[in-house]
Length: 288
Image (cartoon, rainbow, N blue to C red; front, top):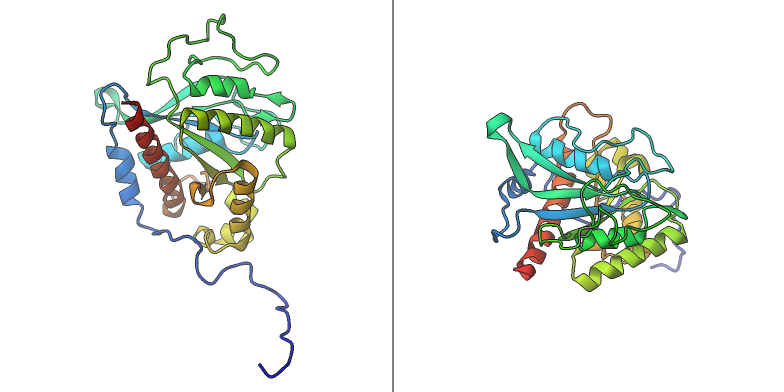
């Protein structure tokens, strides 16, 4: 209007005025109860098996610990995790992580479990072949990953007759919002894993960790995560890189420096967890 050129914004805001995804902050009880009360509808499958995979140092083990913290209401360490971001994987063995409520004779396991695998590295790390075998339930508990050769049917750690319980019911890609660009060789491994999961019909989603260190606005206040332009761009970049739809990618902050439970951290963790359980339950229905 008036024929004059509008001046560009000198210091564009790093934040949107309205969130690009709505979250009920402080009201995560429904998601908590969903996780606590979930039980598969079939007696043949005891739990949803969630397999986490991704590059080295993105926080796969820390996410398992964070879920446990949310559910048990205190700091826990069911999955040993490295205290530093390293270019070498801390996880070496295939292990099932179960979260258990209560003590002694009152112990009660939740009806979902996590499997953490060795991280994907450039020219090293876990082989895509081994993760694909895990999807099918062929990898036994305690198998030590060997970057130089995949698990073979002759190995004692190979499960020749996996049950529906042994198989993976939902595949979760874990990426860091604060890491450098993923190398082509790692992306190739991820694509091979995703293709195998797609052929098996296994649902897939992703979580983006380290959102606090990736964005100053989110570091100041976690509630800014869905107003942050930087985090939204990261989610779009993740989607383009790994082929997972934006609405299946959940930014989270793992527990790291905290010594007490935080409602905002829990809100993001439990929102992602609920989606994992729901996806896994949908898949189990198809197996019955």
